[in-house]
Length: 68
Ligand SMILES: [Zn+2]
Ligand SMILES: [Zn+2]
Image (cartoon, rainbow, N blue to C red):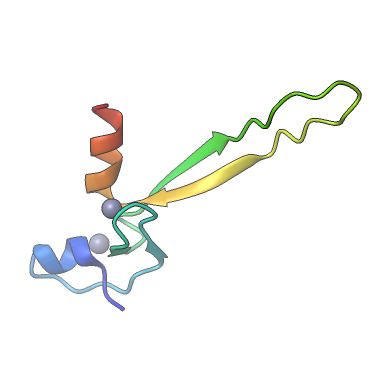
C-alpha cells in the first residue's frame, strides 16, 4: 500500500501506518504519532496503569483534531 498523502502530491511512498480516524495509509514522513494517556475510572486500592496509548493519524486528521 502506498501513502495517500504522497499520492495526492503525485508521489509514491510505501505506507508504514494507517490513520486511526480516516483509515488512510501514510508513509513515515506523513504519519503523526501521538501518545495519549488513557485514564480509567479510579478505584481505591487498585494499581493505576498509566501507560500512554499510541495513536497514529494522517496530517489532515491531526490538523482537524488540533483545531477542535
Ligand atoms: Zn507520504
Ligand atoms: Zn486521517
